[in-house]
Amino acid sequence: MHVRPTTPAALVAHVVELVLAHPGRCRVLVDGAAALRPDALADALVEPLRAAGRPVARVHADDFLRPASLRLEHGRHDPDAYLEDRLDARALAREVLDPFVVDGTYLPTLRDAARDRATRAERVREDEGAVLLLDGELLLGRWFDAELTVHLAVRPATLARRLGPDRAWQLPAFTRYEQEVGPQDVADVVARVDDPRHPALVVR
Image 1 (cartoon, rainbow, N blue to C red):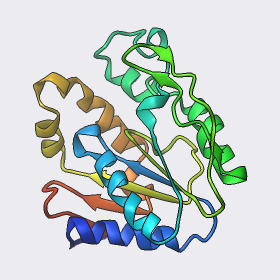
Image 2: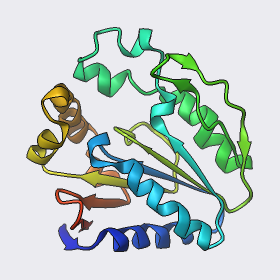
Image 3: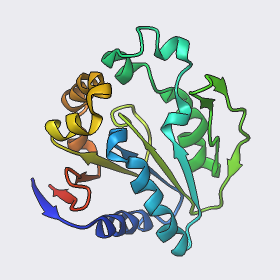
């Protein structure tokens, strides 16, 4: 395994090329700590895919969090709960990932975490050949079905610096994730983004 320097634009082009290799509906997971901006990478994929003639659906995993009474049962700063109890993985699979590949339908949002209320969003349908771009944290190792998975990786020291003191309590969650899931081993695309201006692709 070695790393190959690239550029942000080339990284986007690489992922787009892999997506376009799937002619039917394609589900793409962009995984990484929020501080590494997986949402920004997913957003950057939208226009190139649409320019290539593929309809795009954008979904954020943070819109599918469990109710506060469940995800915060052990307090607001419990790293194990952050890893295990935060995301409503079943709802994300049931309402988004599974139906999307069957008939192109999906629920764009489930819960407003800030207000701790259901969003009551209506289901959306995309045409054949559509691409679903889902970004979020700690997504791999949950038995989600997807045609392509992308993981943003950094050194532990870099992650600690990006999280800062206010979110340092999350570090044990990401350490467990690395140890138990091995996202760099299971993702289809791994990009090291210690310096986001100069990413590098991990080549197996």
